[in-house]
Amino acid sequence: LRAAAADADGAIALLGELEAAHGQPDLRAFNAALRACALASDAAAAKALLARVAEAGLRADSFSYAAAIRSCGSDTPRALSLLRDACTVAEGAPPVAVYGAALECCARGGAWREALDTLAQMRDAGVPADAGCYGAGLHALQSA
Image (tube, rainbow, N blue to C red):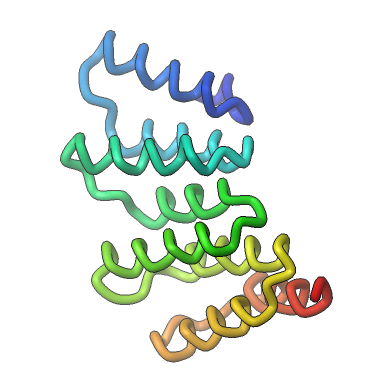
């Protein structure tokens, strides 16, 4: 699926070819397609892929959610909705990378209040923020 790195439609087509030739794709293949959605900022395709993951009886992981969140671009409400889904699936707090993806979205959208809320949510959940998380939070504040 690397050939379609920034082409969500191409990656989804390759996923279909994989399924036709070899049966149900595994989570790794879905995650590669989700990464293409992130690179193409195609949130609708990412949401559809997350639904396909569930329909396949697979459990989306932190890579799945981080890519889906990154596909949201600057659509902070959509990204934070996916973050809530990731928290539910993780049965607690997802890893820092998932929060980081949401914080990047907040920064792109200038959503400084949401960024600060997300950092507080991380603290409350016991997930230590890394330099990237703080940097995204600061970028959101700068963009306000």
